[in-house]
Amino acid sequence: MVPALLVEDAAKRYGRVVALDGVSLEVQPGELVGLLGPNGAGKSTLVKIACGLIRASRGRAEICGAPAGSPPARAALGYLAELFRFPGWYSADEVLRLHQRLAGSTGGDGERGRLLELVGLASARAVRVDAMSKGMQQRLGIAQALVGSPPVLLLDEPTSALDPAGRRTVRALLEELRNREIGVLLNSHLLSEIELVCDRVVILSRGRVVAAGRPEDLSQARGVEIETDEGIRLFPEARRDQVPGLVEQLVREGRQIYGVRVLATSLEEEYLEAVGGDTA
Amino acid sequence: MRALPIIAGYALQEALRRRIFHVVLLLTAVYLGLYWLGADEAFEEVAQFDDGPVEEQELTGGTLFGLSMFGTLFLGSVLAAFLTLGVVRGDAERGLLQPLVVRPVGRGALLLGRFLGAAAVCVPYVLIVYTACALITRTAGDWWPDQFLRPGVQLAVGVLVVAALGLLGSVFLSATANGIAIFMVFGAGLVAGLLGQIGEALNSETLETVADRTSWALPFEALYQDALYRITSESRGFTGLAIELGPFGGSQAGGTNLPLWTIAYFAVVLAATLAAFSRKDL
Image 1 (cartoon, rainbow over the protein chains, first blue to last red):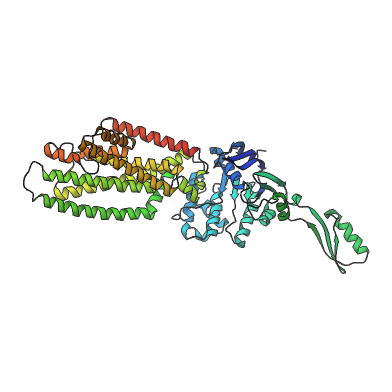
Image 2 (tube, each protein chain N blue to C red):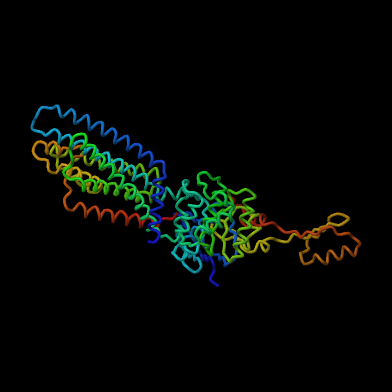
């Protein structure tokens, strides 16, 4: 299967500064990959290379098998930049219409209405961008990225200006995109969000991949906690697959069981360990 | 190139909806009103002069209209500068450019579309102001240029040269720096014209050469000087001599190579802009 996004040994130098140093990653169709890392780790540089906004000093990037930046790659891509703005004098509907024309989308009025509804802006169709809050503009940016139903989405901090309700809407949207077989690379500082929605996580630090895998694989077991009528019992060496045996043993001993919790390190703890002191 | 008319339309909409365009329209109305007042007064005064070797009405008409052409070139250049100074780096810094560039548009179409959008505003603007000034001069003093159409077109092309230079500068400079650079370049052209006039008066070959080369390096000045020459090309004798001194740099026939040079200049500037933009990291 052709990956939605393929990056191989991508590097980018700005003079003496190394922004990206040999990063490789893949996003399959229908897969949601989270990109994590401290400021200056190279996340946005990587996303921009994939979009064709900047040229890699070394390595290659492909979108659905086409070289990044080429017309077929751009036609297959939806992108939300970290820092973006739409002309203040455009209405939400006009922004989407412009992007429909540029993307060659034939979705027309129906697509615009669906997208605005999807991001919770159905009632703001005629509202000018300069009259929108930052959160509304960010949701419009997400709708813009979805114009033309691209098979690949690159989202750079899509929820940074959203309130909790807006973030929940975006999470639901991302899950729907996964069901539609769209490959998504999600760059975010919000670890909880990545943990909730992403199939895989890639952690960058100083331009290199320092950890990668499924969120549950990245976390380490810290034992099992069982709440009984005598209080909480901790089994620090126990794993998830030992839970039925432990419960059975406690019941045999005449204990009442009220709850069981499998303990593991959080993504945040794993992230901090992976990036070490790199918190720039 | 499918995207070219879309981007040009976007640029045109942007230009017409920006406040700066309304400010320019207001300033233009004030400018035309003042020009009418000044022309009316000037023609009334020269009508009272005794007959001499100079045809006062022709001298006054040529001088006033020449000045108005400078005003038109200046206002058109201001408009061209504002429409192009932030097209690449300025828009990229504000985050306006990235959502457009990642679309299957092509950077060449994006640049050319923005240039055509600016041209669609600047060219009609210059031609309308130029025609309005000619009609005002005719109404106030019954004077009409010897050649009408070509000088107007040359002024419009001169403004397009400024727009092309603004576009080139926008790849390298931030919007503010580029705006300053454009007006410095415009000023350099104006100074070249003045130097040429001084050189001619002092019979200084060096000054004339400097002025001549600068006006060719900045062809909006050469186009303006040629346009000035054409509006009074049939004036002879003392009147012709007086007019030749001309306002703001004097008139100078551009010769047959000027149109070819202007086309080549456009091609080089736009090609350089595209080459720089296509390699630029955003």
